[in-house]
Image 1: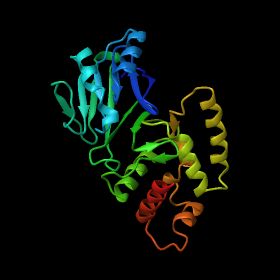
Image 2: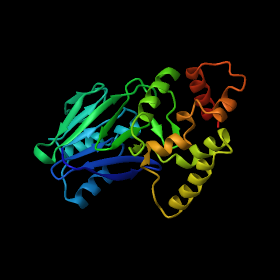
Image 3: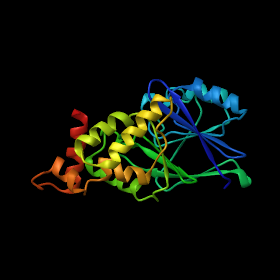
Length: 258
């Protein structure tokens, strides 16, 4: 596999798509809006070889039909076939599957992680030190449990947290500032959260994105990866009556109310 780079493609008010590029291949992660992706590909003078769908909520797939009209030879990969592609076939992905995009030294190999939690059919994609988490994990937070269970969320986030600390995490929404406000309410004395808030404010004021984060950073600031920390337990389970899985559910419900 060749070296890959990642282009952030923002759209709507807070969504992100991503282009994964090597010398000979291009893949798109999620596509809620086609125009920004098409504009970026045109500016790069590149064509699209594959679309990788993480989950099928409308704000992540609404632009797919237009993308497929522009690039009819591109292959679509998704955890569910119940998406509109303008009649193009959908290749259903499963946990551990490896997808080869392109050919030769410049190809891109992507590994699929099945992580149901945010939705029943939800996957992440890993390639070249980059993990595309969509709405499974955000910086300093995680996705709501629309269809999954606390146990599934616990398992999903534990799998992400097990990656090396330098692994880059590309998430689906710019929720970092509000997530950090919640994280600070959980761990008010965590200096890493305070420092990250300052960095995020400076970055956003300059028009920058907080994506990607890293596994190492999330271990320091994300309360959903810190369930075993004393301050997090004190916040969600001060009498220590619940299991780790139950604490995950309680913490997610607290975030829902925040």
